Image 1 (spheres, rainbow, N blue to C red):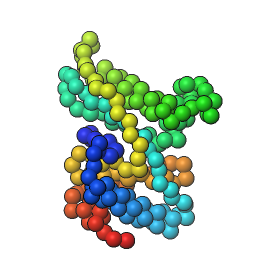
Image 2: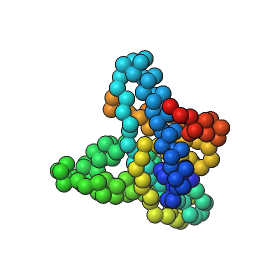
Image 3: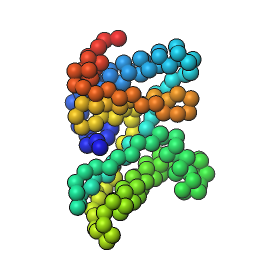
Image 4: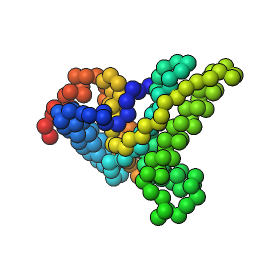
Length: 166
């Protein structure tokens, strides 16, 4: 799975600029292709990305990526409140609890009965791209009401797009 979701805690200015440039290049290519081929509008998608570290009996990380609008709808259903009462923090808290619950269920399903396990605290970030450990980057765009994910992998390919001037 991936080691980190969203933006690193303290990215350098160059890394942030490269990510922004890469997002622009990918977005432009996807938009042109989909709009020219099938005449559907393409928008930047905002995703909530949650992860939780598995600490024991094995080490690893479990991640979840969910469209912000879907997360908001699920949070409305869970909290049973009016849309105007639902805050962004409530949506973020819901996604954190969702990854926590999913991770606990996954670990319970694969470990022997009564085997204890330990999870870290969930982390939730928001963004339009996802950088995996290593050389894979995912970019999210919205077509109609659905998310489309474009993946780039390979350091030289990522560097090419990051440094290309439009």
